[in-house]
Amino acid sequence: MSLSSSTVVLLWALLALAASVRSQADPGNGDNSATCPTQSQFFDQVIDHSQNSSHTFKQQYRLNTTTFKEGGPILFYQSPETANLSCADKTVLADWAQELGGMVVTLEHRYFGLSLPFGNESYTTENLQYFTLENVMADAVTFMDIVKKNVTGAEASKVIVVGGSYGGLLSAVFRQNYPDTFFGAWSVAGPFRGFGDADEAGPEAFNWFNYAQNIYARRSLESFTRINDSFSQVYSWLDSGSGGTLQKSLSLCSPPSNSSTDRTTLIAWLTSAYVKLAQLNHLPKAFYNVTGPTLDTVINDTLSAGSPIAAMNETLWHAYGLLAPNGCLNYTVSSDSSLGVETIPFTWVNCKWYPQNFALGTNTIFGQGLTPTPSNPSTVCAEMFNTTQVTGAEVHSKYKITQQDFANSTRIIFSEGEYDPTTSISMPQSWLGDVVGTDVQKSVVIMINGIGHGQDVEPTDLDPPSVVAARNVELNIIRGWLNVSAT
Ligand SMILES: *[C@@H]1O[C@H](CO)[C@@H](O)[C@H](O)[C@H]1NC(C)=O
Ligand SMILES: *[C@@H]1O[C@H](CO)[C@@H](O)[C@H](O)[C@H]1NC(C)=O
Ligand SMILES: *[C@@H]1O[C@H](CO)[C@@H](O)[C@H](O)[C@H]1NC(C)=O
Ligand SMILES: *[C@@H]1O[C@H](CO)[C@@H](O)[C@H](O)[C@H]1NC(C)=O
Ligand SMILES: *[C@@H]1O[C@H](CO)[C@@H](O)[C@H](O)[C@H]1NC(C)=O
Ligand SMILES: *[C@@H]1O[C@H](CO)[C@@H](O)[C@H](O)[C@H]1NC(C)=O
Ligand SMILES: *[C@@H]1O[C@H](CO)[C@@H](O)[C@H](O)[C@H]1NC(C)=O
Ligand SMILES: *[C@@H]1O[C@H](CO)[C@@H](O)[C@H](O)[C@H]1NC(C)=O
Ligand SMILES: *[C@@H]1O[C@H](CO)[C@@H](O)[C@H](O)[C@H]1NC(C)=O
Ligand SMILES: *[C@@H]1O[C@H](CO)[C@@H](O)[C@H](O)[C@H]1NC(C)=O
Ligand SMILES: *[C@@H]1O[C@H](CO)[C@@H](O)[C@H](O)[C@H]1NC(C)=O
Ligand SMILES: *[C@@H]1O[C@H](CO)[C@@H](O)[C@H](O)[C@H]1NC(C)=O
Image 1 (tube, rainbow, N blue to C red):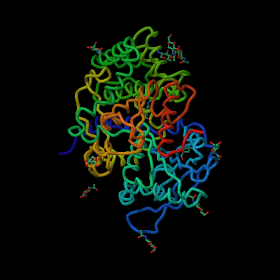
Image 2 (image 1 turned 90 degrees about the vertical axis):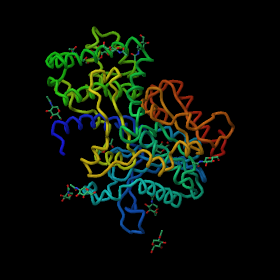
Image 3 (image 1 turned 180 degrees about the horizontal axis):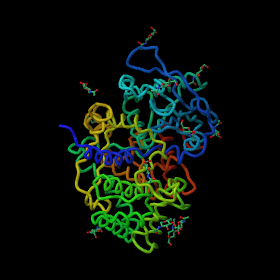
Image 4 (image 1 turned 120 degrees about the horizontal axis):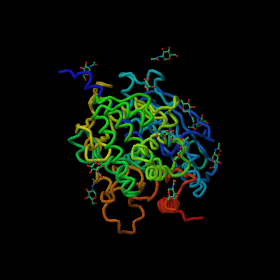
């Protein structure tokens, strides 16, 4: 049986929403605007680590040894799903390297950015076979060996692997699978739950948007109610075929119809505005006409606007105004490209070892007028790559990241932010068990109030005291692991 073309379009609209939330880009690269002080370089990396093969490709990395003292730690930031290699100079790792006499290095993720094993032919079925998590891990292990060999005094250096968002998953996976190479790990806003198709992910597939609406409800119940009213208004106009009114009220370039495609696309786009403005609270430069923290900007504007729908219009301008060259907002354009995400390789990652499932519940203020639809991200794996999607259970057991594995794990910091929906699918404290104890080597969850996605790894002008304090705790934990005292 083949799907009708309209069903396929609807699926793609839902998948676009899923793709936009699955990828939260790189907390270690901020708004990706400034160039990086440390120039990148390339080295010859093995294409297939499972064979003793001499085929190599050029993998991009950065290495800054300015603050390195003999035997000091290697602070290794693993770049995630972006087109641009992370810049660790802009992260707190630069300060910590100074404190610890360490060096800061970053490695680009294979098949992203300029680290393409087969150049512009990298995404063919034939060439994607080397794009495995095993190879991604081995890339990092090989790279660490080279750095230790190359940098004088680094032979016995301990590696702390750091990554944010999808990279936060990676850093924990590296530590769990190569504990001899990665002495400790800092998983910044790493997702570990809600994996697999609808049946497997179950209620956890809804965590993301449930949590997102709660961010608003907790910060301002009045503003939350107004946002709910604006979504009710949108659904009511869609139901009555009032696309023209919608277009005028929300500055849209074209009127949405009440087709399920338009409806889903529009709602995904509206919802994404509210989610991103909370999640990237600390990055006003990523938005239009915002200078302060973006969550409170939305809340204040929502409260002061003349009507709920006028408030929604303000919010949409904040979220998408930078993408409005014609003075109107195009709801079919996602904001994702501005985050530098590379869709094809990241979709492969989603199919093969990061099967994150995001479903928008009809019991949320955002999805109140949607028809319940089972969300099965695996559809895209078949359509795009003629492959099946891995199950969550497989990923968890194969890469040693089950609840049991983490309960027994050592030297992993999982840090999470209050305004980041990733927190809802990140490491729960309960997985690590009893927090009472004196063992500094035991893995730990650090929950940080008042911050956005990965804000602790990336200092900004808008840092609240909570994140400054949390960074001190994180650094002290790492000092404890390394057994070095504060200077
Ligand atoms: C290396 O790190 C130092 C100290 O954090 C920083 O001042 C410098 O800009 C970085 N880059 C280079 C190329 O030195
Ligand atoms: C790979 O091949 C080289 C040269 O034949 C050999 O020296 C090396 O030990 C081999 N490595 C592994 C892991 O088999
Ligand atoms: C990011 O990568 C793209 C493509 O390689 C490049 O054109 C752009 O200049 C890079 N941006 C930064 C800030 O390095
Ligand atoms: C890749 O680049 C080469 C050289 O620029 C070009 O000849 C070839 O057509 C490109 N292939 C694809 C699939 O774009
Ligand atoms: C390691 O050192 C060799 C020899 O100096 C150099 O060619 C190579 O680029 C270095 N590799 C890295 C990753 O720094
Ligand atoms: C949102 O508005 C709808 C329609 O007015 C209402 O039924 C629902 O209870 C509201 N939800 C919340 C959470 O306020
Ligand atoms: C929507 O907001 C923009 C930006 O603040 C404003 O220019 C426009 O007049 C608003 N439109 C409506 C219908 O309120
Ligand atoms: C909106 O963006 C889409 C995709 O880029 C484009 O095809 C379409 O023409 C745009 N619509 C308007 C009215 O600008
Ligand atoms: C900027 O936002 C404020 C509210 O935050 C609004 O009053 C003003 O009209 C906006 N300016 C532009 C140019 O959109
Ligand atoms: C929001 O409004 C409150 C109360 O007026 C004010 O203290 C705060 O600075 C405002 N925040 C922003 C980001 O506009
Ligand atoms: C899809 O993969 C299956 C086996 O995995 C193969 O039999 C089939 O020919 C492939 N279809 C296409 C269109 O490549
Ligand atoms: C975790 O540790 C407990 C107690 O030492 C042990 O019984 C259990 O087998 C371990 N589980 C795993 C998955 O390593």
